[in-house]
Length: 93
Image (tube, rainbow, N blue to C red):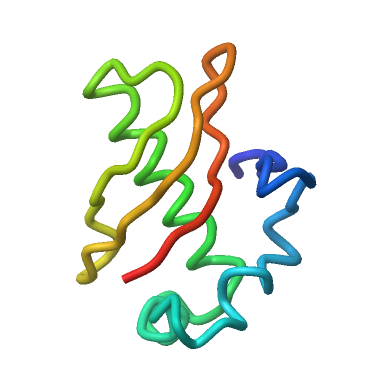
């Protein structure tokens, strides 16, 4: 099983077991992902993995905004790559 890493989110470390900051805000439009993946935690992990893949494939360093495919949805992810670590700032549809 993969180790779930903490993610830096707007000035605080956000653990995948508590991703309510982005999923509890309806304006982010992420409920379809929760439905698709079965939980907020699984949806968050899918967003994180998609963002990391995009960062790696595009060679992104520093601040980024990138549309990524997560399941059947296209999600915009904003964040920062610091010392090779992808830190999500926000995600929305």
